[in-house]
Image 1 (tube, helix red, strand yellow):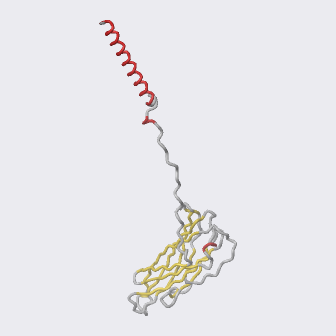
Image 2 (spheres, rainbow, N blue to C red):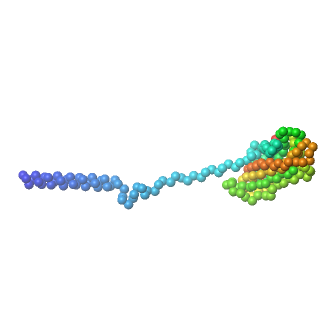
Image 3 (cartoon, rainbow, N blue to C red):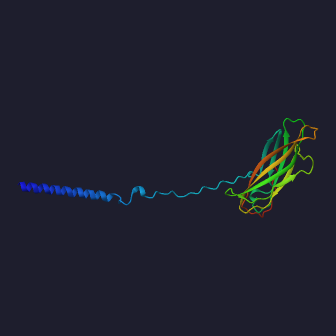
Length: 219
């Protein structure tokens, strides 16, 4: 009987060992192989997205623009427009820019204001903002002394025609420099010089450059 009990005990231990081994093998089968560390698994990469290009600024998008500049006692108002519609402001086109100036003085003691010189200095840019070759500054130097009278209600009007640009041009930035002379007194031949500067950015269209200019009324 003792021999049978010992044999029965050995059989039970052997069965227990077999069960533990089977459980271990089953558990091992659910685990990743040792050569694949979960921390080494490639991370998912989100799809690359490109940012949309920034819109091109166009100060004449509505057809005209008005700017007010204050320099010393002078308030200078500039109106800008073009007889060529904005969809025809292409790189290849001749692009007319018309502007009109008038001024007031505060306090007004009867002094006059004269415009002695206007300079438009261009910066031509591509769609990515990079600078492109441009053209020489456009200048109007007064042919009368001391200059053109621009004290309201008198005005100065002029048209600067921008030449063809680099085909990659997306915009042209014009730095408008107005050199003014203010009488020291209403009867004096002495003048104080003031300079007003404005910046005008105009988008360049990719449309048909061969169309005729459209007549756009001045503001």
